[in-house]
Image (cartoon, rainbow, N blue to C red; front, side, top):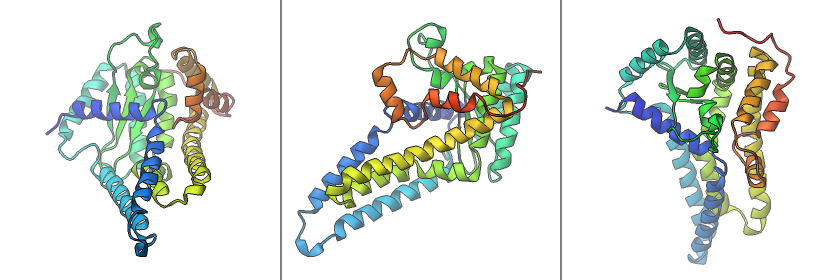
Amino acid sequence: MRDFEDVGRGVGADVDRAAAPGAQMPAVTLLLLGAGARALLGLLPAPLGAAPPLVLGAVVVVAAVGGAVVTYRTGPGRDVDWASADAYERDLLAEVPEDVGEVLVDAQTKIGGRMPTAAGVHLYVVRPAHWPCAIDGGDCNCARTRLSATLVPSRRHPVLLIGHRLLDEPIMLAYVLAGEVAQAGRVPRTLHLLLGAPLLAAWFVLGVTGPPHLLAVLAPALWLVTTAVRWGVELRADILAASTTGPRVARDYWARVRAASPPPTRTSRLLELISTHPPIAVRAALTAHVPGRSPISPT
C-alpha cells in the first residue's frame, strides 16, 4: 500500500507539468504522428480504402475514453492507504492556524457536497523543493505552484492540492479555494475528463482521418475551441470566487501572483496565449470589479 504523501507528491508534480508553459505541445506531436500513421496506412492495398485510418481512429478514441473513465473511477491509485490520508489531514489541520483550517474545511465540505459519490475530499499541501523562488526574490517561476490550488477530480477519492504559501494568506486562500469549489460541479468535472486523454486522442485521430489539405484549418479550429472551453471554465470560476470573497481580494491575489512571477518576456507572453490557463492579465481584469460582498477577514 502506498502512503498518501507519496501519492500527493506524484499528483502535484503531474498537475504542475500540465500547467507549465508549452504544455499543449504534445497535441502538435500527436497530430503529426497521426498524419504519419495515415501516410503509412496509405501504402496498404487500395481495396481497403479508408477503412484502416477509421478503424485505427476508433480504437484510439475508445481506448482514451475508457482509460479516462477508469482513471476517474479509481482516483490516484488502487493501492493507496487512505487511512494515511486521514492522518495527514489531521496533522495538517493541527499545524495551521485556526482561520486557515476553517477555510480548508469549508472548501472541503462544499466540494464534497458537489461530489456525492466521493468517500471524502482529501487535502494535500504542495511544498516544492526549496530553490530560490521569485516569491522570495529569486528567479524561479514557481508561483503557479506555491500560490495556487487544484482539484484533482475522482469518483471516490478527489484530491485538493494547495500551494503551501497560500497557508500564510487565509483571505487569498479563501478566494482560490472558492474557485476550486466552483469547478467541482458536474459540468466542469465532465469537461475536465474530456479535455484530458480523450482530447489528446482527438489530436491523433484528426491527423489519421483528417484530409491533409484541410489540417491547416481543422487543427487551429480544434485548438481554438478547446482552449476557449478551458479558459471559459476557469474564468467563470474566477468570477464566482470574486463574487464570494469580494473583488478586492481578487485584485490583491493577482497582484501577489504577478509580483511573485519573473518579468514577462516575448516568449513567455506567447506561451501564455497557448497555455491551458488564461493569462494572468485577463484573469485579473475580469475579477477586478465583480459585484460581490465585502472582503472577508480572518477570524
